[in-house]
Image 1 (cartoon, helix red, strand yellow):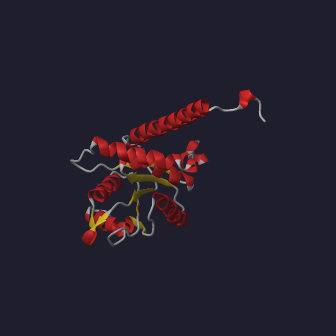
Image 2 (cartoon, rainbow, N blue to C red; image 1 turned 90 degrees about the vertical axis):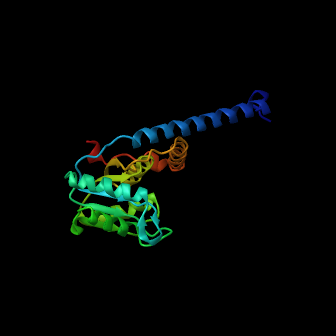
Image 3 (cartoon, rainbow, N blue to C red; image 1 turned 45 degrees about the vertical axis):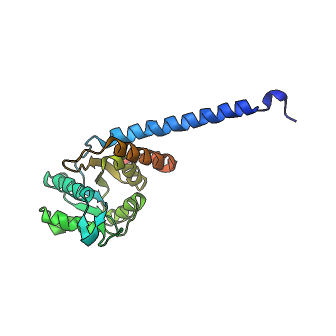
Length: 213
């Protein structure tokens, strides 16, 4: 038998569990704060392509408010001369067509020439957005990107794109005239923080060596 001093009593077990739970909870809320702060800042710089992550398509192929806001932000960056190409990333969700096709059509309506639009129309998650977009960009020899998405989504998106070897800057897309409710903002940032904590490899992904230099 182990010495008496090494045996854990129910009280010490309880304290250990409470300390562990407190550390986990503190880490989750701390990371949620980082997620929120990160997404509020414009970080776009000159790049080779702006990657626009998909969002919900409504019945009849209409873009949702979030999807429209992302495209409008990307088009604004394009017209500012920040990048010569836009890559729209998103497959078919609840309603066809693919998010990428809806985004491209909207971008063309907003004055972006079709030849400047690239498509990745198979992804169904942030990880697939990054992996499949990286595959498209690799064939063209491109690796410096600006990723456009909702503010709460940007930190996790950046980490996934870094994981696939890309140099990443970010730009938040805000829905005009709509300020998210505090409860919604809290929920989405906490959800994103939890997703990062569950995938340490993504959370700890670093910028490619050339970008760090």
